Length: 301
Image (tube, rainbow, N blue to C red; front, side, top):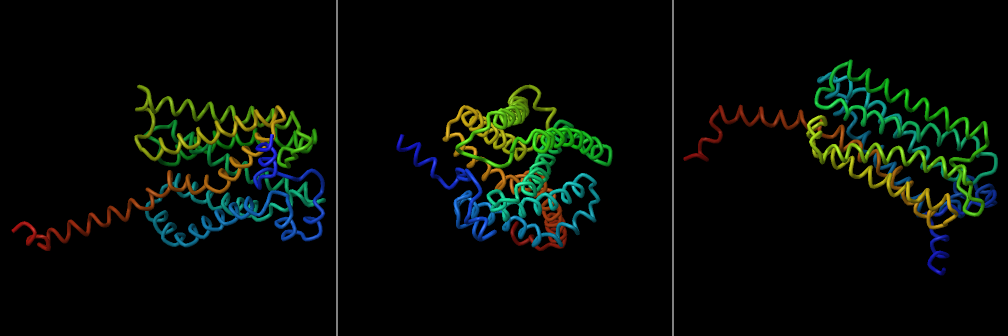
């Protein structure tokens, strides 16, 4: 019981039971000092989001140059979406105090709804791209990928908006005393669907159907990470739906991991090789030119 009590006081367990007077009085800074989520929770989120956006900005000139030269519709669209979602996620990470501030619940729900929908859009579009195998290229593949993603995310956003603003189910505001079984039941279904999709792709990579998927180890590692994260999140939501405070703590951990590390993982998996490929090709060209000019003849003597 003592261990469970310590977990309940963890910085990753939301302690907002009622409007936080510290957060209300001090605004953003007050929310950080208060016990809405805790200093550690907010610091990890903000630092990770700032570092990633800073990295995108640092590489922006080089990335835009390569995108304009190679004219890949999929990569251009995906890079633009990544920038938009990264800025939304940065705002979400920096404005955690809104969840605990009276009068900010509505705008917090809207911000969280669009941020999570944007991140889910990137998830679904990458999965749709994977199912198109090694032949996904050009404007037709881009149209198919974004059409599938748009339909899925549109339906998901509509259902969440109905529960949020129609039925008053607080999907994005956690409460560790009055656990809403309807809310956690919805999250169980949501995580179950994601875990099932990633589990199916993981199975395909380890079966005779692997040839239908892109033969890139980075995609396999990505699927493995997302399957583990969604499986753990599903377990946490199931515990929370049954009133276990350990489930809230575990869900807080998975939420921090998702918002802090998913976008960098996506970049490394899907875009990093694209931006580095041209540099590798250029190095090979330089090497060939130098070899033809006799620079390496001494090495063979």
